[in-house]
Amino acid sequence: QVQLVESGGGSVQAGGSLRLSCAASRYSYCMGWFRQAPGKEREGVAAITSDGSISYADSVKGRFTISKDNAENILYLQMNSLKPEDTAMYYCAADPYSMNAHQALGVLTHETNYWGQGTQVTVSS
Image (cartoon, rainbow, N blue to C red):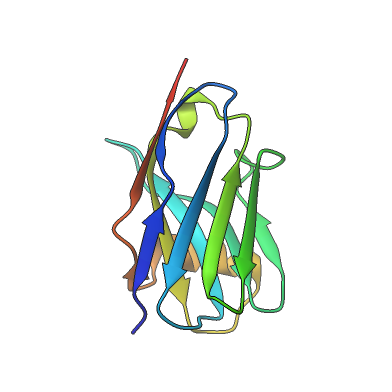
């Protein structure tokens, strides 16, 4: 099993930036972020695989950047130009199986058994 601990959430005004971090207890082939707002379904945000492939949700392309420190097993999500609709609980997720980043985004959002406790991001207008 892998334990995941997120940090870095907070409250910002629209147009601001936040950087989320996720410390993983061990290596996983795929890692990523999904979010869930009250009353809404989970939405995959971004995923990255160990071969470096990356996938983003259309809603965050050009604004969010996912990266990973492979030596330390730390996942990051740099969020710029934040919008009120980005307000949600953000979860880090991981999966051990090899797949491309597009597949990983779906698996990490809906199928994996490994995710953290979440960190709240609130964007005010």
